Image 1 (cartoon, helix red, strand yellow):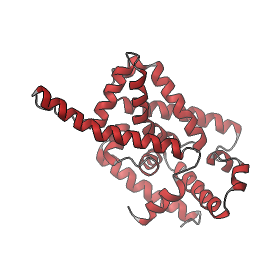
Image 2 (cartoon, rainbow, N blue to C red):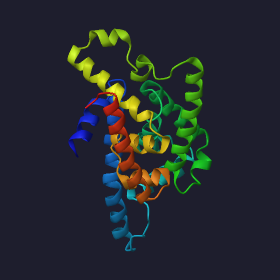
Image 3 (cartoon, helix red, strand yellow):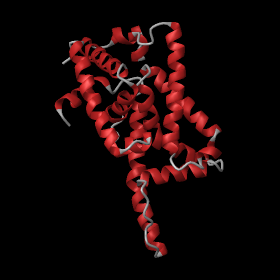
Length: 242
């Protein structure tokens, strides 16, 4: 990881308001991705059948299975479906909304998914559907915020209360303010660039994972990541953020 990206991740992408919960989701999602492949291989050996070739990753395949079991009312399967997909949903939302709002709307998106779980189970790519729902919810929330004034007020976008800020160490508060400005610059990029950067930098997802979730080609994602980073650097330079 280059120094600019390391600094960006350190300063902007781990807010106290959601760090613990999202970190738990990442650990669980990594566990799902790690163990799903071995489970498929073990099943293949036991049944003496060749492993099926599928363009989906093992994690995506298991997410689809969770969705199908959720359609039957399996709440444990839906919980696993949530844990795997929440980073994708959160990455889309935080790329265009204040962090505290994004955290809240993650729950709204999965309430919609539970309500429409029978439809969800029929989709080839439930994660992509969730990202579309998240995008639509974000646009509705943005219109609401814009009708109330500037949605990028520093207190709103950070999700921190003034009382919390005054109780923090001054150097920590400075770093957080710097991070808020970086995320604000990211959100002001055109939507395609902001989304891929949110998923890559905030959530740590790979290019292929982002391509699958947004249903774009790997080449398109590579271009959008490169151009998005260039635009973000330029925006930060104009703001005097090195």
